Length: 188
Image (cartoon, rainbow, N blue to C red; front, side, top):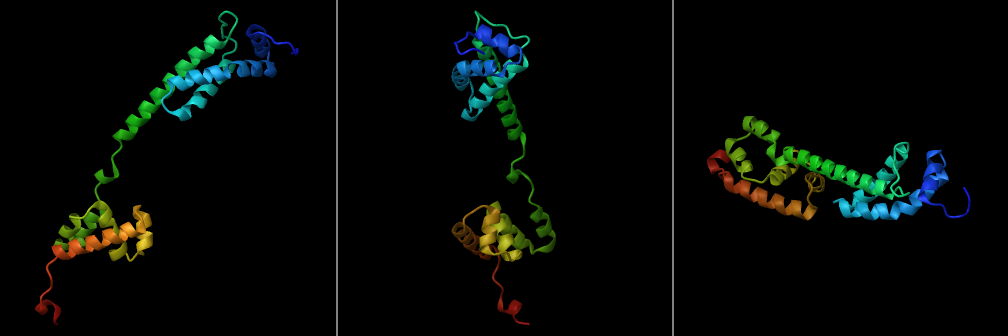
């Protein structure tokens, strides 16, 4: 290619013949405009560069069928960017709809309930069911499984001070739910 500035028609003709520098010239000439157009259309800022890059990829892939408008590929790029932005928005909506249909972790039955029903005192089971799911997990990990408070807090996803406080309150609620043993029950 020569050093003098060339128009889109000449650069596009050279790019269609495989001249990478000519395609680079078109990219440099129109990228900022395509990116601004994409930024106006997409919801997530992270998608702006992807949509702009995809427009130029499509320009290259479809170079045999791209029509210049008044000697410029910019109109074709802007229409393609609009379509790609719509596709990205549609994809995001479908993904969010899919995620909304997934069951929430709290919706799933707690496996520990079935084990507790068979092995524990019914009063303890009733007391455990009054606790939140996080508190039940903490009690199960620390009291029943013997895990350290630090490890249990990490497994449940709370800070160690919060786990200590929650475990203290859970133990107090369980003590209140269970009747205190009488002297006859303690003495052999």
